[in-house]
Image (cartoon, rainbow, N blue to C red):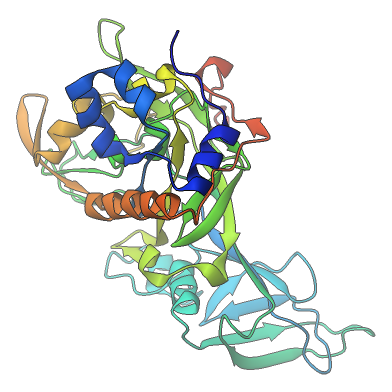
Length: 399
């Protein structure tokens, strides 16, 4: 009979300082050396990590009331608009929002400078941020405008709430056209001049639990340098399998997470405002998930290596197609990380948009937190839909 553990048993071992915790890199070597069954009997938790651009992110901010009070109808932070259709002094700063007068809004292909992700980084860094607000005025909220500076410590609440993070597996992007294009996957040179990718492979959280056997509502995670939680599946959550031409499973597809945490606990080194030339702004987010080894089946997936995990190669020129299966084949993360792949018979240089060294650091930090007893596992109150749910995208039918 194989190993069977519960969250309560693992958390008890964490509390006692006896839990065996390894990173997703380390567990690969353990399984290679001593096999699945022996490793499963020894290891309690496998930690994962990723550090990459995550556009579907943002922060709910409650500024507190001024005297006299104002019902903020429009808000700008460092000239970047925030959404205010919530309550009197609440706003949501989306990381891809840009100043209304920024040249990127006119399809200017030059260097992008500042956006919502940079506002969040500035707040977490302890910097002063300019707050401007307008209102039409009411009897209970008579003030019509305000201009001041704020810091993260001065406002009531700041909640990082990201509707779609930790993409399970993403495209390897290339460009088959005859012109350079600027995309959310970076600048792509013409005629297969380069290839970019944005997943950490064998450290990537959702690749190491592709069935969502341990990840659900209430899962406690490393988020932005602090403690966060999975609160729902992410938008565009379509978990599934990548299969080669012979029908063999060679990787997972498109699961996502909705996550939240206290922005005041977080650190700027794990929340970095980021810009892409000719495309726009975003936020690079550090995120890590502990995977409890409840049984051998969970360990089998947690121990998959870069050689066994693949990404779809997709042409981003013109109106790039749906990503299901990839339209130019599949490549392993070992190939991507080697610095070159072959596409349509041509050798193509590769470059990551995410940082593997930072992903490794996150997995290591989470491992240390657990070993010290500072971080216990959060047992999900409800698991998220896995590949067996058969979820598929429903495109907007506009011609």
